[in-house]
Image (tube, rainbow, N blue to C red; front, top):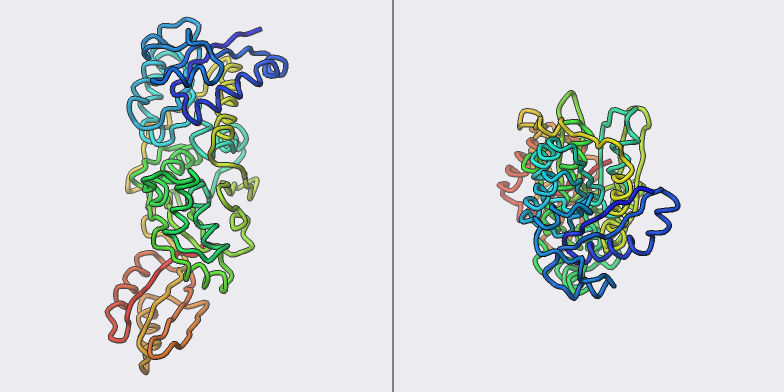
Length: 423
């Protein structure tokens, strides 16, 4: 039976979960897959984490160099997070001929070409299922099950923190700041939640998925990004009345040889499959030209779900005779490959003075930019009137110009919010 030694870098939540699964399922993996996976080394600054998992301190390495020189280590698993020293450690492992498995979406999204160059020199493998969607097997689906398809579109809820926050706001008509505090107390959100709530985390994951889908690397900095911090309970309540649910979506579309890539809050119709994805769950909705619509749903974070994806990669890697190569990642998209003036429908909420002709003034501006309205809602409250409307599809540039002109109209108090609508 083939014996495979694994080194785990970082024994925090994800690394600890990975160790537990490997130890609990070692015999089953031997029986079902014909490989004996052994934890041969670990690297962590806290020895008590090693003993807490029931592992012997003799496998605690002093440095990445010790792991790279260890002949019993075949696969290095990185669960540390952050750009450095994770990238340096994995590069050293690849240069030593050891395949790598990582859950580090930011590092992988930003460093994929560099890691692939190092891997190609020794023939080592790159495995990264756990970078995107936690326990959902979306990477394996994209790389091994979609060969018959030209992928046309991806829409994904791939950040559990923001989905939890928006779900609570939707179900309880709760305020963003209040729910964020609860999420932090429960451990769903970091003390500094910027990476999640401003869409950075989703951008890293969309970069990875889009690069696979379109066979050309999509750098993170080419992805349009907007967070959820401007979403209010009032907008969510009105959206529900209009038939919509708000979600932070990562969207990529292929159109006429160019790519549209964006992360931002959207209103989705209540009957869209992604609208029912609640709390910390994730889902990826993919449209292929042959298969049509498919959706993968599951837990997007946590020790065991993410550990599940890592262990899957370890077993898959251990059974490969030759590892997949990603030379297409050396070919990067540029601004010329990206559709910046994308199309969308828009929800707009504004407050105006109760004055004759105010709505006519707004519609005159919209007409100037060829923007038509599909729904409108107007309530009178004393001398201040909230006006809400949903446009038909238009371009981002046209909508931005129209909003700038509407803000300058005499009787407009404020444009409270603009949220894109995906059908």
